[in-house]
Structure formats: C-alpha cells, structure tokens
Image 1 (cartoon, helix red, strand yellow):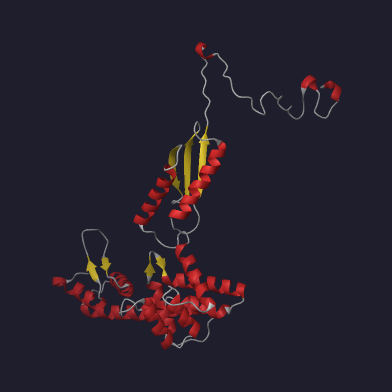
Image 2 (spheres, helix red, strand yellow; image 1 turned 45 degrees about the vertical axis):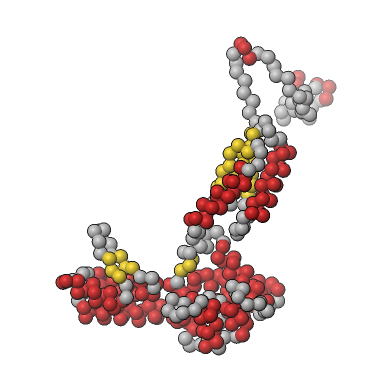
Length: 335
C-alpha cells in the first residue's frame, strides 16, 4: 500500500483526495475525508487493489478512475429507483444522478435519500387524505432537500442551492416553493408546504430515525429527574426508556392514593410546559405500603386499624363446595 518511499500511497491520495492512515492496527487501513463521495470512491478502489495486489502508480490511477465511474452509475441508479418509487416518469436527465448523491449523505446517522423517500411517502398519504394532488406532494417531499447534494461543494445554504437546482431542472412551482419554505424561511402559501414540513419532522424525530446528541440526552434526563424531585413526598426518581418514561417512588406515609393521582398529573404538566421533545413522556407514580410484624413474644398486640369497608366480611366460598359440604348451587338449607 505504501510503496517505495511512499510512492504508492501518495499516488492513491492524489487520485482520490482522501488521506490514507496505516498504523499498527492489524489488517486495518483508515481512509479519512470529509467528502462522503470521495470516501466511497477510495473504499472501492482500496478494496479492489488489496484484492488483486496491483499496487503500482499506473494501476492505482486506473482502478480509482474505474471506481469513480462505478459510483456515478450507482448514484444514477439510486436516483432512478427513488423517482420510480414515487411514480415520477418525467424529469430532467440530470435529476437521477443528482438525487442519487443523497445515498451517500448522512445527517445525525440518518441516510438522507431514505429520509427524502420517507418524507415523500408521508406527504403523499396526507395529501390524499385532504384532497390535495398526492403525486405532486410526493415529488415535493422527495426533492425538498435536493440542495444537500452540492452544499459541500458550493457556497450557500442547502435551501438556496436547492432553489437554483429546481429552477434549472424546471420543476413545478410548488416544488420550488416547498424547497424554499420547508424550514420556514418564507411564508407558506400552498397546503403541500405544510404537509412536507410535517412529514419532514416526523421522519427526523421518530425514535431511531437519527442519532441523538449525547449532551441533549443527558440534559433531558437531568431535567426530568429535577422536575420530579421538586415535589414533596418524592423518594426516588428513575428515568427509563431513553427518557420517555419516568417512575416516581413516593413515601407512603406522606402521599395517599388520591395524592398520587394528583402528583402524576402535576409532574406531567410541568414536563409538558418546560421541556420540548417529540412524542410523549409517561409519568408513573408508585406508592408502596409495607406491613411488617415479627413472631416474637413481645409483638403479640393486635394493631388497632381504622374500620375498612371490606373488613369483617366473610370471605366468598370457593366454587365447588361450601360449609356443611354443600355446593354453591345446592340446597340452600344446607348452608
């Protein structure tokens, strides 16, 4: 891989634009680059070179060129499949290859081409329910983040670049409007803009959709426990299920059953008002009462408890037999 005086690795790095790191880790080569497309080309080329063992400058350049062509074809195929999934048949010749670049773009661990497909399908379903053009809605949902395909290569936000691309590809005015407004940079006029924004939020914040920032997760857990602990009578607080449920253990001698219901409501209201997150948080208040007695001679005094509604009643007779050996459905005189 390195070659004489580093000749091979320099050729590979110049051809791919990727930094090659070969350290003491066995059977491992690290390819480092901020550009996902360059990383993919380098990975394909390196795997092929290792397999055939042809590490010469001329062969390296040939393999890298072949990997670039293969990646271009892969992106175009991915774009055509995505357009086919939403039923699009007429589009600019350059659109499939451009859209397919999203296959190698990730945001917080979520693949952007898959995200756009989810937005397209959700937008189409909602559009059909309210009587809006579902086909146009799916197309707008699929292309709402098209600017991210070149945002690393040109200056400007992905919204500005997306608008330029939509105009160049002669997309429908509603599609251009959605691209411009799905992050609320302009006033929303068409109903499809609302639908795409809603579908974008659903796909982004659904559980497992994106990798969460650890700092945000820790802050949410700490805030949940802080809110619950601020109430009187709370003994312990446990945040479970990634912060989507909190269990509050209260002192049975200070919190009654009715108080527990009110406490759960009050905690839920404070969480709703003070924290912002997707979905709901389940608040469970657990009140535990324990009665402990010992069998020693000094513990023979029966405690005086308040009369309960069920205290003093006779236990129900088990099915199949009662007193005097009579069955429940037998002669009443035998009871």
